[in-house]
Image (cartoon, rainbow, N blue to C red; front, side, top):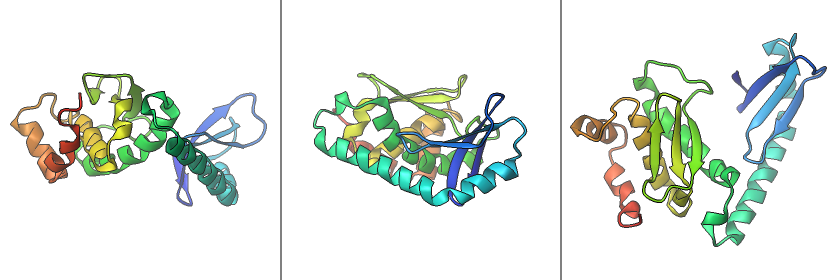
Length: 189
């Protein structure tokens, strides 16, 4: 279950063998709370709220470490999945905000999951049956606006499975400058 308090999104995992509420900040900045089975959502929210400053500091440290690593690394292909997700997930959240009102179904985690793949012939793919989209790690070389456009493109496949006029109409409606954002991808495959 995903929750949010004081601007901090976190996923709750209730466990039988846990006695206290514990917070984990992952290298990608995501926050997980493990809690005893009997802990209420209010108790967990209160605990997260009390630790909000510590969580933000831990997230900032993760972000700084990631940015330092990215600035030192000329070989984008050597970046880990965590490095890619650190960059792709916030862009996916922005793209999701554009389209979620059009979709009638709910998704575990709030939106389709992002997977990073070593894809050479495509920038992204959509797997609506398993609720995830795959993004090529090669997108790490592209500007944020371009990556956000690729992500929205894949999310649009939840509405239109092909690339016919209806699909492009949705893209134009949700992101009027999508053709401009697409230009850095041309000839890069």
